[in-house]
Length: 361
Ligand code: PEP
Ligand code: MN
Image (cartoon, rainbow, N blue to C red):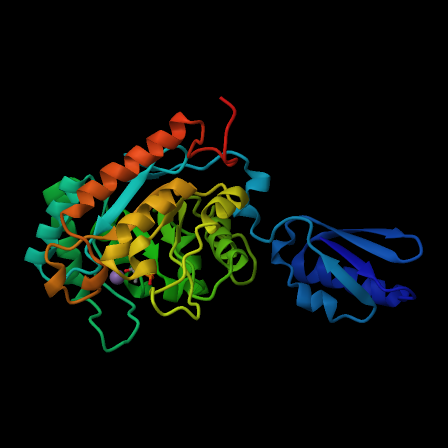
């Protein structure tokens, strides 16, 4: 970070800026004086709030040289990160990984039947969601947590597949771990809820991080970097941080109401360029319509997604939650074709693991 002082800034004003950086943030400064004074900040400047520097008298501009989301940035970590789920399923790099299952667990029978269909379709990690944040709080929010987690464990035992489940309430984290949830998802509605991000930074269980409906890329990657950083609200390093973060693109709210959310396909290669983290995408919660899910999946995969998370239900017409966007046995065709597209692109030199669109062969 570089701080340009205005012409005519006084020595006292320069000192005040340096004091704020060194005392409030524990970072070091180097100063260059010519016509104006330029202060270079050394160390992890992600923790500096630009607004608190800009408001000081005599400060003209604050320029960030490195991204605020340092831990998630490709600048400092050129290689793709691969996150291993349950020690056996890789996500990221040249892998294409499928997460699928019902939007929510509704009953033991519904969950187990959906899990069987997902397994037959070729899903790698099962959605076993017990707690839901919904568009309306009056909608189905999932069953009793313990009962739901018991069913999630049964889905895993029946199929041998690892599970992913959304954590909404911090008080349930221990239960999630106790019942063997393999990936903890942070949904769009909690994507910037710092207490949740902070708690997940203290464990090493893989996390799928969605972005909020109105978040831009910078906000999303900052949340990811925060989980990885292991710092607390006082910017103290309290743990190693959780490096096992998987990003999930799900689209944002726009003026268009014909699809549920607007998913910009260009975000996939862009986020891949900016971050080394695995990036998957959710065609169900973005399109909101099962008739669109198949083609949107192919689009995401062709654009470079490392995987797909989608809703698969044993009986979408009777679903208590998001039946309109859930697929059934067609999940198998979708996964098979998506894998073909992925392999075909690798054959013509567009590797999923590459950040440029066409890699030299
Ligand atoms: C979900 O995956 O079930 C979900 C609610 O998605 P989102 O958080 O993206 O809305
Ligand atoms: Mn859903």
